[in-house]
Image 1 (cartoon, rainbow, N blue to C red):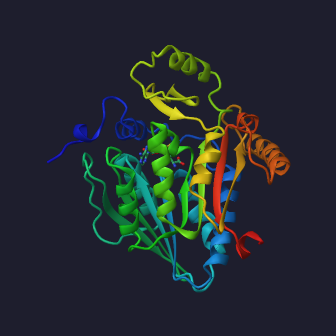
Image 2 (image 1 turned 60 degrees about the vertical axis):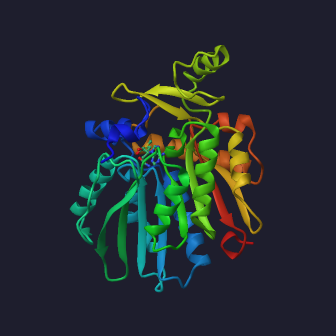
Image 3 (image 1 turned 30 degrees about the vertical axis):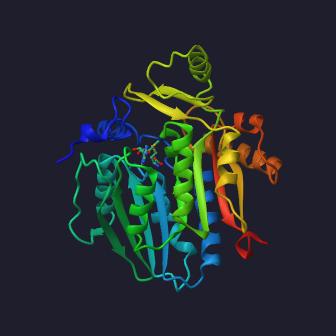
Length: 341
Ligand SMILES: C[S@@+](CC[C@H](N)C(=O)[O-])C[C@H]1O[C@@H](n2cnc3c(N)ncnc32)[C@H](O)[C@@H]1O
């Protein structure tokens, strides 16, 4: 049997960092759990997807780096169903993460709001191979909502993630693929990140929607110079610091965690996964500043974000645009009626 340590690379494994973070229970303590701009991004993409696929039986979503499902579960329970039409009888969310602790917390929370396992859910905490752990479902008069848990291993190449994702959706491509709260930023190395972008694109229907919410260069500005200097000096302390935007921050429980904040390279990543009949664009999600202490402060930030998005609409973002934001979202969408074209 292959163990967890065989799967994890020395002290940088996201699986061990996140298992520990979720076990400590402080990670989800955001006072405003879902930002209005995140909810808008999801709802607008869902609206486009149901216009593109009015007759499909199943609306499928793949969430990369799902964690405890903090953002997407709230939206699935609160808003997602209102966009569905009569043909859409199943909403399937495939929850992909390397942390089984996060996924199990999500499973418990979903059970508490009426979801039942479709069959026993099986966890292999230290598995060196990704696998489909199981699923929970809630049947409602209009639609049945299923959440399938896929426990990945980051030491496997990203095409394994794509294969698992497709297997979890009966071989079908996804209508909506998401990454929320910066999960792709934890992938070390430019080549590997590009490969994840490519695989996420390939598991999504060409007419489907992609939303990748990421940290921008306006986030963690206080520690970026330190890591740029270390990179220039060739002394990165064994961390995979390769380029501007790579850094290591301390988590809320004092772990050192690799992260990449995105700038104009994201334009190239998005161009590389966009083909004829599709378009991509960037929108701001959150302006820099402290964690929100109240809905009012979140709303004030949201208004600034909306105004900035309006000013930037229709143009390719520059380095200054990225520096203006704490978080941004990259979108890919088909050209056609759903996009007003
Ligand atoms: C910042 S958390 C975001 C969690 C969640 N999306 C949210 O909105 O709260 C990042 C998540 O990405 C996951 N992650 C990091 N690298 C990953 C990888 N290569 N494959 C899958 N998940 C990964 C971590 O385990 C963690 O749960």
